[in-house]
Image 1 (tube, rainbow, N blue to C red):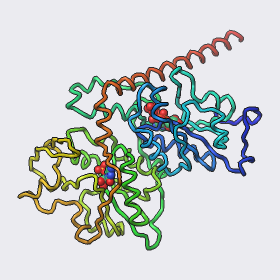
Image 2: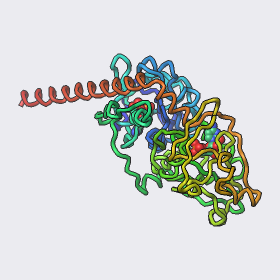
Image 3: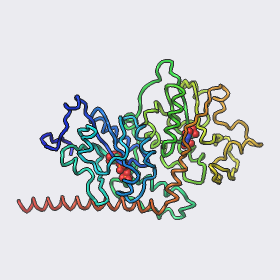
Image 4: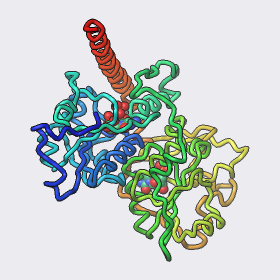
Length: 414
Ligand code: CTP
Ligand code: C5P
């Protein structure tokens, strides 16, 4: 349904009693917040002037979906607040979208992707706003879903999952895995497309930023505060895999998915796609960088290229946990300084120029923590995915049945 039925009595708002401002309401779980969510919010914002996003609490999600989300409500609130098209976040929004909610926040319409969302009782959560003609549909983004990311995480740990084929493939057309096809158009829709202002103080940071989380967001905000234009360098998948802190297959999201993800946040002004691990003088000159920042929460690893031919196998401690380093990954830099290659520090050039800054994000959350939440609760998340798909397929079959019945009735009338 795309057209508004202005004759409907339930429709209490119109664009005039809001001083000509059209407010749009979106709501959702937004778990493992990804670029499908931001693209949904981008399209919704295009339907009006102000975008208000209701985010469901952990308890509400558990009640309706049967399991708690991977990202906590506080994490999801923070991330949705960081998305550049969002004007306001409403915490603890009800799972079913009511006209009262729309009216309370003076929203004329509710927008949602063209997939099916049902309550624990199988009821369409948007039925009320659909019936009132206050529902607008936007295109669901192909090739990304929370369900698929959960599946990838489940498959990522070879030590806990000797037979990866036990993680079932998802066949639902909504949350099922279809490949994300990055195009220049999609990147352009997300990109800030602006140059640094004259005399801008450009800040450069680099990393994998896999499964973008509130620790990343807090880090980027702190880094950007060191200047007035933030460039983020994203490592390609090969570099990211070699700097994985454990035997986990890493990264979970590909380079182009990570690019699309990070571009959705207003703190990011520009992205280098496939950034070099070691920051050279050439890079600093080219991007006119004034400050290079790294977070204190993660160790600086040596450039993987400096350890060619060496076998680093060992163990180090991170957050009181022993981490076993496989041959294909690199140990923390301190392990390398004893008789190993000199100057493996990727930040050596900015440090020698006096433009390197360590930033405290104030968050101890790292990507590995998120992976652990899923991997430590494998059975819960396998069930979560299976239930989600079963619900979607049941609903699809029911809709198909209804359509067939309508066709049969029409044929009978003829
Ligand atoms: N959405 C979208 N494109 C995607 C994923 C989500 O447009 N690839 C939209 C949904 O249509 C909805 C909003 O984002 O309007 C929030 O969806 P949510 O159910 O929280 O996210 P999903 O990733 O679809 O989660 P799941 O896999 O559990 O369905
Ligand atoms: O996840 P990744 O290692 O790619 O992190 C990118 C950057 O974010 C690094 O500089 C890291 O130190 C920083 N970070 C942070 N606080 C966190 C998580 C990451 O400062 N909680």
